[in-house]
Image (cartoon, rainbow over all chains, first blue to last red):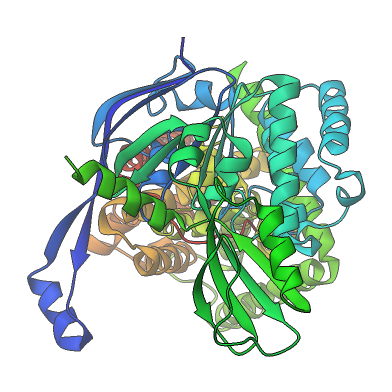
Amino acid sequence: MPAIRAEGLRKTFVTRRKAAGLRGSLRALFHPDRQTVEAVRGISFEMEEGELLGFIGPNGAGKSTTIKMLTGILYPTAGQATVLGFVPWEQRQQLAYRIGTVFGQRPQLWYHLPAIDTFYLFGKIYELDDRTIRRRIAFLAEAFEIEHLLETPVRKLSLGQRMRCEIAASLLHHPRLLLLDEPSIGLDVVAKQRIRDTIRRMNELEGVGVLLTSHDAGDIEALCRRVIIINHGQIVYQDKVSALKRRYLTSKLVEVRYAHQVPRDFRVEGTQVLKIGRYGVKLRFDTRQTPVEAVIARLAEAGNLVDVTISDPSLEEVIRTIYQEQAEP
Amino acid sequence: MTMRRELTFLLALWKANLLSAMEYRAAFISQVIGMMLNNAVYFAFWVIFFDRFQEVRGWGLDEMLLLFAVVAVSFGLGVYLFGNVMRIAEAIANGRLDYYLSLPRPVLLHLLASRSIASGFGDFLYGLICFAVAGRWTPDAVARFVVGSLLSMIVFLSFLILVQSLAFWMGSATLVSAQAANALLTFSLYPITLFDGTAKFLLFTILPAAFIGAVPAEFVRTFSWSTLAHLLLAASLLLALAVALFQRGMRRYESGSAIQVQV
């Protein structure tokens, strides 16, 4: 049985539109202009137990709305779904005992208390006995490397530290499925990597399935085996991450800064120069033809390097390419 | 079994609230003392009033003391143990119910008990002092005081849940809720004999202030099966209505994407 089965899930919201200013407000008071916004427009997919599935799309694509329907937070306007055999919006409480959720923008830990106090409270919420809670906290504290953070009030933790504690809290009750909505939002590169490593480890250790949403393709590339790309409330692509990488994440962007001025005719073999500044250069290269280390070596040969940033093409760029391909006959 | 489960859960939440308050002990103590002083100043007005007029339509200082005792204990305990009762409309409008919906417990109960208003403890203590000063120290009177205050608290909480659940339909009901809470508290602290006709009818129905102050205070003064039956009926009816309206509204809940902080 699949862990998640969604068929034709739809969610529409009714919003009010009003023109700017006082006149607009007065007009809206007597003649409200209601508009229907389709946040999710018929999403169907399946996810196997223990799978690491990525759900990506730009801001406002409908990722969070979909997750909220799958956790029973929102009633769908139409469509059906089962999560671990439960209909989320009808059997919310039974389902909540079996899944863990983390919303990057909505902390679960009590802000003024040390994380350990929320962990014990969650133990009571999930009806675990004291011995089980203690053992589980000890295990998770070690796995997430948060032993030294547990007794510090949450308000004094960094965002990355807090997020590690948040994910640990969501695993206290041994869920079979973890739904993570933008867990890496606002984190720096190192903190992101630590979160990704820990999620992967928990998947290997306990077989917990992970549905992860992100607007950062890097999260999915590092973590998931399969990916679903969603845009304007619809699935535009679903396949293995390896296939996505092979087809769409073939290029990388490099931004370099030198200690000296860059010549106007700056060129590096195997790359395409996008922009030349006074001290910096922006380039693109195809990883299938030129390996990353070769590009770095060539850039270092070209002068005295001060800074290098390598990034993936933006998700918007990937989606644009997918649309272009789909539009071609 | 279910009752015991929910009570264990409530105790865990109240413990977390207490631990949170202990993080800021000075703020907690100053709010408690501040509220007791505030109440004392307010009550001083009635002491001066009854010193000059002795009684108003059958109500004297003794009746006022018991009325204050019941309302202060009911309101104080209500907002101390279920502090989010003042923020239901805000939670609905800001999409803050997501947190409670993702955990396996009854949403309304979880929401209500996830916050504690420290000044409520000051009201509670002040109410106990009023009851002690009123001098009815017989076991019967104490038992009636406990029952009357608890039923009054249920009416108070239910009414606020009812009004604030309108946020599911209105989008924002924060202002209406604040006005309703103020009106409820104000009218529950006047001698009920001051009102008659339509005003009295309203205080027993649309704005059930009579069931928060006058009726339970009357029950504490003298036992009567009919007063107890009225109180029980009002409390259970309002609670059932409040829970039903909240559950109905939950189907319309729209969540939100604002960045939130749990406090």
